[in-house]
Structures are given as structure tokens and as C-alpha cells.
Image (cartoon, rainbow, N blue to C red):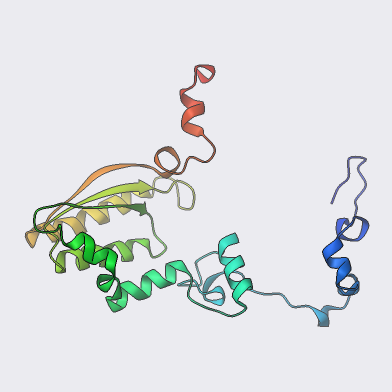
Length: 201
């Protein structure tokens, strides 16, 4: 840690850390050179209950894994398992919306990118149509953060092919709307507001 005076400081050693002090100073003994007393742990992929080794961890994943103290299926993995087994279609939520399949429209909104998301959407579209959905509208959110610039075009083309296959089977399935995830739904940095404010013009 660099201080304002330019000196490098060992922050954990030099500053108050009451929780670690309660541990009787054991942390500091490990910190000062006892590698046999600590272990590196993996914080991504199947080691923390995510679907594949390519899935990176985040704060929620870490809190869940540390809090439980064992590997268990995290959110994305639970979705995969529910789709693969068909259990998702037995849930109260799906039963509720399926009551409207005869005359209504099923609207699906979600992030369209790779990393397992496309295969989930394929299964969801197929499962919904197999369970009676006759009219499906997909509202696409392109990623813009975790994928290559411009790659959303390929994802949309693949989705269009999937929807065309459903249309051949008599399901009215189309993309209804789209937009960038940061601009439409998850603008935590207020990019849209800043871009549209008089100060930005």
C-alpha cells in the first residue's frame, strides 16, 4: 500500500485490524512467512459451485461459498440443473404463466451473450413451446462488458435461427426489442442520465 508521502506500507501490519487482533496475532505469524499455515483457494468455476471452469466468481459467489463452507450449486448452476431435468417446468411460477399460453404471449427478457447463456435460452424456448407456448417475444439485452465488442451481432443471429426453427413448428416467436444492458436496465453509473443532461451537450 502506498502512502501519500510515497513510502510503501504494510497496511495490515501497521494499522488497526481489531478482528485479526482478536485471533491472537496468528494471522500476522502466517503473513510473515509460514506458507504451510495458509492455502490458496480457487474462487471461480466448479470449485465454488458455478457451471463451468470458465465462469468467474464474484462477491456473491464468494460470500455463499465461504458462508456455507462447502461446494454447492450456485444460482447459474441451479438454473442449468432445473432446465436439464425439466424441473423448472414443474414450479409454481411456470405453471402460473402457462395458464396464459393459449391466448397470451410469453415475454422473455435477458442478457444475450455466451458462457452458457445461449444454451439456457435455447432450452427455455424449446421447453416453453413444448409446454404449449404459442406466441413468444424475446427482449434482448446485449452485454457490452464481459464479451468482445461487436460480438452481440453473432448472438442475435444465432437467436434468430433458433426462433426461425420455432416458427417452422407453428410457434409465433420473434425478437420484440433490444438494447444494451448498461443503457436499458443496469445503468449503475448513470451513463444514460449523464449523456442526456444539458451539461453533456
